[in-house]
Image (cartoon, rainbow, N blue to C red; front, side, top):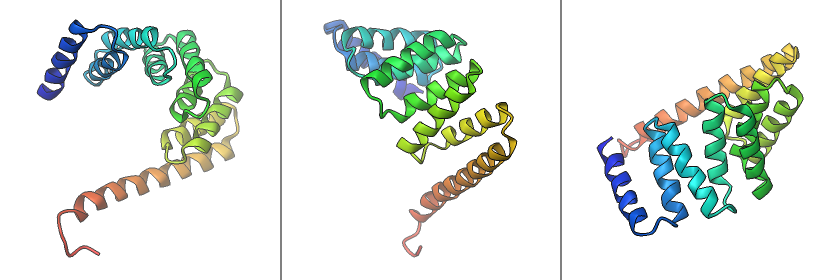
Length: 174
């Protein structure tokens, strides 16, 4: 979008003045990611990690991109680094679960998806990942229950979003 392009230009101007701003690299990486420019986004997240290795979010985003590129070993390493910095990062557990699922490490995938759900019960994609891991492990009954729960949560989430969008238009809504 035009606003994203403008934001990227402003961030680039700030980085031209001071390239050591880790959050500017993060914001630019995120903007690149939303525009599908994964390589550019990954480069910015790596710069952020170099400048401020204590913040786990850049590791999660870089790990997610590496996973999408099929580089599961690199993805797993980045995601484990994120969790070393903050073991309560639900997104990192979810993405590590996806990584383990791709590697067919089904017990590890299941554990990561379950931990993601403990930390953030609203992360319904983790419920779907858990169902996939159980299905791949041949635990079909458990998998079907998780798929059903995922479908129910997704439907509830969508109807809730539709209700919020519709409810704001009328002051007569209950």
